[in-house]
Every structure is written in C-alpha cells, then in structure tokens.
Amino acid sequence: MLLQYIRHNGSEFDVVIMLAPASAPMLLTRNLLYTGITRAKKLLIIIGSDRIVNYMVQNVDSKKRNTGLEFKLKMIAQD
Image (tube, rainbow, N blue to C red):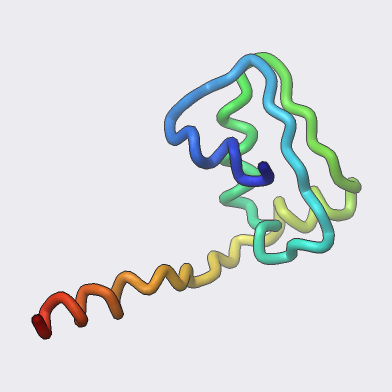
C-alpha cells in the first residue's frame, strides 16, 4: 500500500520502500518524503525518478485534508 509507512505512526523499520509516482501529485510533498525518510533506520529505497524526488524536496505545499470531520461534528451537535 502506498501510504503504509505513514500508517505506522512513530514506527521505524530497517528497510523502507517508498513509492513516488508522478501519477499521484497530491502525495508528492516534502512532508511525506520526510516521513518516509525518518521511518528508515538502515535503508531507504525510493521508487521514482530523480525529477520527482527533487520536486518533492521543493514542494512545501500542504494540501488541505478533506476528512469530513467538520460536517460530522455539526451533525452530532444538531442531535
């Protein structure tokens, strides 16, 4: 799974294989690159082009996550 390294919050692994697909631009952020790097204790393998990795290093935009939490809280408050 693409975001598997994020799901293991705070965990470290000897080897991390990180996908950096050009087809998923919303995932190509410096923050996600940092997360993948910091999970690897011994070896990080990034599957993606140098161009994509350079883009991730420079991309500090954090996209607003649309979780629907605000809507759900409003619905609960109305009950």
